[in-house]
Length: 213
Image 1 (tube, rainbow, N blue to C red):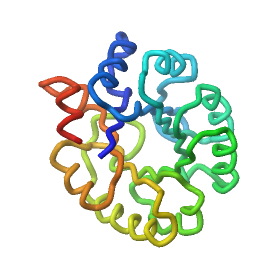
Image 2: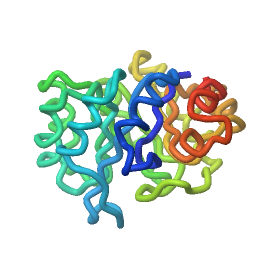
Image 3: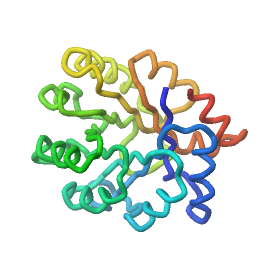
Image 4: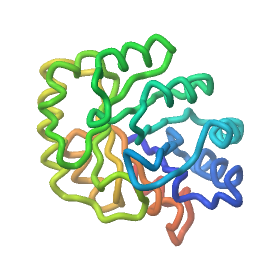
């Protein structure tokens, strides 16, 4: 299991320290939640802050766009050379075009799905993707409760991936902990995003990451 701690749950007053802590603690990716206040009812961080995060991180960035204007935000964050950029299917009229744009920039394209979006909607997109991000909470805020139905959703997505693009990864974001991560792994999930669980773990971030792995 690859672990991508979300810096949304970090202490932004000590962001460089908290980013270094997860990298030294054994994470595989640094998950960056970008929200525009329109697609979701929250605002987070822009490229200036993420540039500082990139300088502090020894692991690749995993950027998750929760925005209405994907084209604008891809242009903003592409110069930082994240490993992957996820955009929401629900906010994009031309997903094929957006996938092609992200890949042309040397970045791995990923599509994110809200909890109520069917995995089958990706049937004719999956062959062009490197990853699918399943939200296991409603996007917008950290610290929410895990939605159990995402496990069945991951199973259905895994079957679609096996048929059309076996190299495509499944990532799950929201409410992940050391209990439900076992069910997610069994369902075929490859990457988990965890914010509150990692940064608020009583034994520290390294122990939290190890327990997910």
